[in-house]
Image 1 (spheres, rainbow, N blue to C red):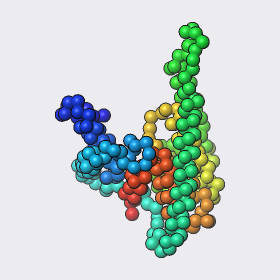
Image 2: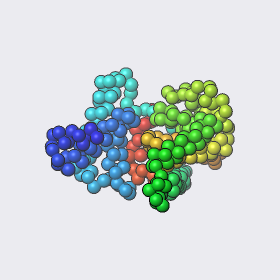
Image 3: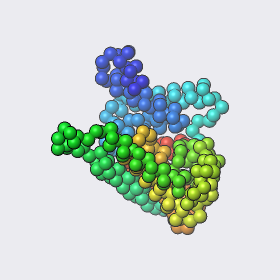
Image 4: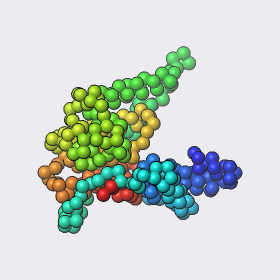
Length: 301
């Protein structure tokens, strides 16, 4: 919106300049939000295309978007919060990755990539179909029986809010997850959720079926958290609640990699987590390049 407004001020009704500055504004805001340079510009251009690849406007918009992304990181990290480092939200704990042979890594990447694509497709198709059913317009028999649209909106959003609230009571991992607390999902909750910047008070974890401050006891615990998070995101999207799906999808996908800890082992787990998160995100948002950049540049060490 800011980029589009600036274009109208500087260039009048030029659609070309409005498009370029809109992408630049989106890239800058995404970079400022995620704290990850360059990835924001690629994500903005990929996200606005219906299938995988860069938008046709990338020829004119890519350079301004990259410049905007760099300017945003300079402003946020260099001027406003100079003591904070660039990127570095999480660690995959992959100190043994270099010792893996190529066959093991590629096989894991392909298997988890296919699994992530399946998760993303199920998510996308389910949300699309349930949205059509939930918000299907009704044809009144007469003006007297015409349904007030705002009543339907209140009823649907209230019901979905209650269901999500019930889910969060039993699985508090679905609450307040952002890039700062992604580490807990990536390492199978070896990092207690209470130690992340969001944290949770004890009253919100009292009825938890899977303790968010303890490592997953087994694959079943990881599966429960992954399914609960996926359902919560689906419901939020179906209910048209504002909010992003970038990091929530990462959170939903990461626990699924921990469902088979004995099969993967500690050496392959970082590869599995990365590939499963990337494939799930890319299959929903159609942003394969930006997704890999976000997950790569977000590594702390």
